[in-house]
Amino acid sequence: KARKASVTSALAALVTTRLPRQAMRKPNQATCPHCPGEIQPSPLPERMIGADARFYLHAKLGGWGARGVGFMEERALAEYERCFCRPESIHAACEDYRASAGIDLEHDRASRAAGQRIACDLLALWGERGVIHALFDPPTLWRAQCAGRFQGHAVPSGHYIPEELPDETAQALRDFFA
Image (cartoon, rainbow, N blue to C red; front, side, top):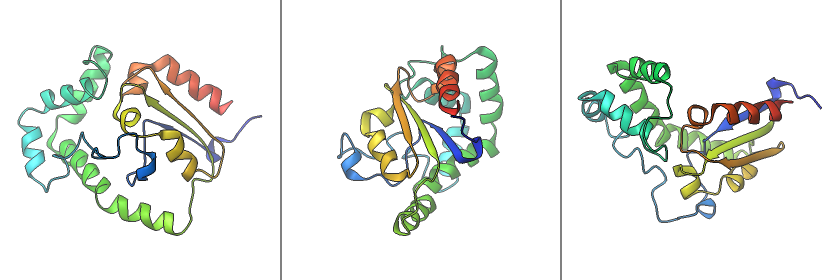
């Protein structure tokens, strides 16, 4: 049975910003252990990251369960470096983290209070070596927020699923959208 892409959603390694305590595997750990510095007021994190942006980028890409940057194709890594290692990109990344600790939480609370749920079918993939798998129970999180059919599972990767497992990611998406 074919589904229209406009009413179907696929997600990779994402969780909501406001996480139900009962869905956490390790309830005493912080919900954003990889970004406490990035949410600090500007310009502190921007200046710190910008001092050696390539080093910071490689540390992030090679962390979160990835085991180094060897999984990245050389051209893809060069493009990440070109795009990220600019002051405006670093600032935008920090603003995104700041939003996840602020306005995104407010929007999420309002949506939940209004009883809003994701209306379309949902595919979620998360890495077995990533922070999502370590701290949360993704199926519990997504089923609670999805009114449509939920499908999801952990894959043998870290946080950067499409880069680490391009063929498997493409196949999961083909199967889901079929």
